[in-house]
Amino acid sequence: MDKTIEITVLGCGGSGGTPLATGYWGICDPDEPRNMRTRASIMVRTEHTCVVIDSGPDFRAQTLRENIEKIDAIIYTHPHGDHVNGIDDLRYVAIKQRRIHDDETIRVPVHADGYTLNDLQSRFHYMFNHSPDGVYIPLIEPNLINDYDDVTIGDLTFQSFVQIHGKGRSLGYRIGDVGYSTDTSDLDDTALNALKGIDTWIVDCGQYDTPTEDLTVHTNLECVLKWNETVGANKIYLTHLTPRADYQTINAETPGHVECAYDGLKITAKA
Image: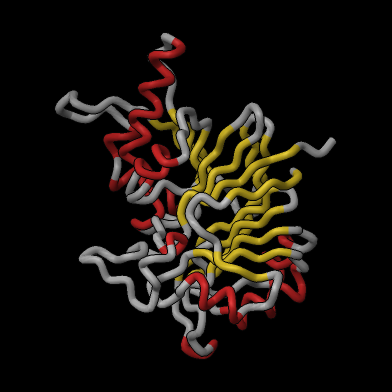
């Protein structure tokens, strides 16, 4: 039987957020609160389970803003800093649960593809292992996602698919009627078919008005609309937006079923 899920957009900003450090707003109106964007991440929650996709540099602030006290797992899309550099704050997620349950073995499960896990275990080795100086203890548990694996956490299942991200790659996820495709410059037929039939799509549009031939690591509106001819989503929320993407301006320019995501946006769906 279908269950109801709530998805919260924790952040919909590009790699530097909006405004950028030093207060640069670009063309974004600073008086429009939905232009204030932290780094891209979502939370998926049911009555029993809470999973976050990506823990970027704003992860701590996002958990405080949304009153997130318990997280059952983190799933990663790829290892770029704007999606993983808040991993240190998982220490406190684990420590709180250890105290609540009086269980010093609890770790926060993290799920990612092999490339991302290797990167995380190299850069943040002290989160996975005892540090030589004895200061750090392992507080997160790695779990490998093979390409196109389903990832089941509690009563939630995430269907993974591979996305092209410039010369690299990332993972997108389908959760029931919702797709999440941050950090992609192109999607092949396998990815599009994995998304086919969703109702709601949260999708990268970091190069919103860049000509298609000039795209680098993110996509534009033209590609999103073309992909959606196959996917068939009834509602599209654009994410990974930069200071070049003003909330009201883009909403006025796009078709009625397309609008900007914003930090704190909540979507109710079926999974």
